[in-house]
Amino acid sequence: MITIEKLSEGRGRLLAAGFYGVCGVFLLSPSLDVMGAIVPIRFDNIQWRFGMVISLAPTIMVQAVALGATAVFAVLWGHKNVLRAISILAITLAALYAIMALMFAIDILQLRGAIPDGRRDPFYVMVGKCLTQSLVGGTSLAVLGMGAWRLTRTKVADPKKEVERAARAVLTKKA
Image (cartoon, rainbow, N blue to C red; front, side, top):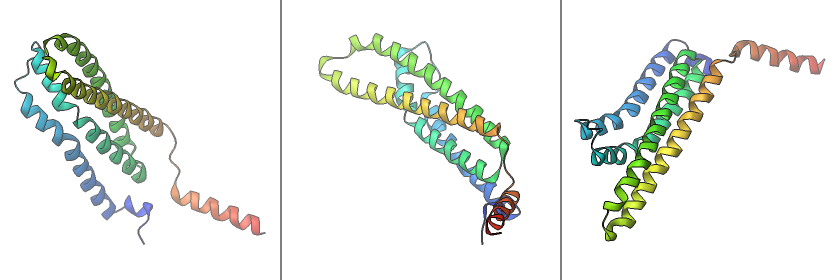
């Protein structure tokens, strides 16, 4: 029978390494695709900044899911250092996405006058979608990061001792 305790021993370590590798690729791949599309970087160009956010916003939820899944397994496997790294990365990404959303909102105010009348509705739908993805994804990453950090500050119970304690409690009740 496979148990949580067995996951942290022997072959379970191989499973953890493989899983962390997959999650790492899942985390980085969409961002690298976007980076290929937005290079060379031109922060001084408003059209480039707008296009960057439009391209990057959909990757936020993928990153949140990848970090969330990795955090769950880091908790199950008792990998506190991995959980700390996830926490720092999630909070850093949340801060970057908050800054990105703020800059995007300022760019929208500048661009909205240049949008032709027939294209304003699709423009606002796209803007709403990107802002929603940035804000929801950024908030999710911030909550994930804070939750992961709090978990690293709690003492992790030893599963074997917990089973022994539960068995003693059952035996004491019967006696």
